[in-house]
Image (cartoon, rainbow, N blue to C red; front, side):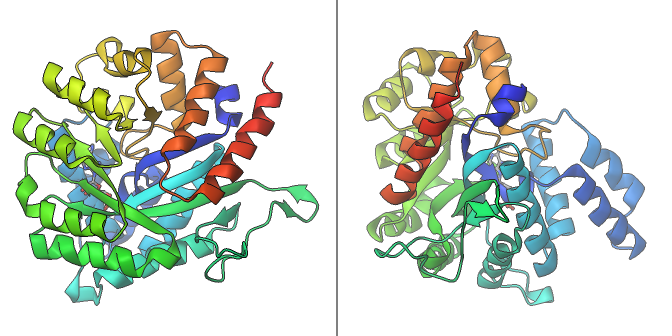
Length: 361
Ligand code: 6MZ
């Protein structure tokens, strides 16, 4: 485990509000309890509960959003989440979040995202690079990065953002998110994610916004097959997104389609087991995809909600499927090929993995 912690890693499927520390959630709940907005004792055991069905997970997100959705808290959780990933040597993080509008506190989707970017700026425990660079190599905005600080090498993390469309949203709301993503490209927004409760909403509702996003050059990842829905899974695969998440309820026809299209899969082992979308880890489709050399990346999904880390996901894969150090390292390294950031970032990351490879026994 120690070795897996020290290995450089790439995280491509992490939801901001699912990745909050329990201690922060409890602190926020206590504060709202004191203000009489919630009853702390009712909420405490919900936050600390470990096994949740998929349905209960989405109920928990509604609670988390009550606790977190003001600008100051959004900034705080963003900073903490990035620092937590960096502390276990995640060197590249694609963080996704659903821009939220809340008129009662003067929050627009844009101001929500500005609070997220503020959180990236506030990261202090590690060096962070979150903005795309000009051709001269300088960041497009005022973000500064350095590898060496006060003579000691500091951890450095690249962070890029994906804006999520929640499946509860309308076509118009989804379109608003895509337009916001386009406006915020200089702040490291690279693409769009479709997520939310998989039993809610229709693919046709989101398609116009996703097509527009693609036309405008945004990259797209879809939560696909989290519940059995053959028609939707096929429509999603036919859309040819750059990546898909989960891919749990695929049948032979869909596996064939996925494999021939070579769409990389974001695998979230603990999340799938905890929510019972996969009944047992030893029959997880990771094994089949891994053995057939299909592009995949191990991810946390919601490290806070599922009490996991990227290192724990690698450990779980290694211990369940009998993979050694070298295989784990290769798995982490190949994920660089599936990131949405530009070739400059890819080259930097490859350099980081090359240096780490020399330290492998
Ligand atoms: C589908 C999920 C998810 O966006 O508020 N989300 N959507 N499947 C999952 N697997 C369990 N986990 C998280 O982060 C929380 C939101 O991410 C989506 C849900 O829409 C959830 O409300 P943000 O930062």
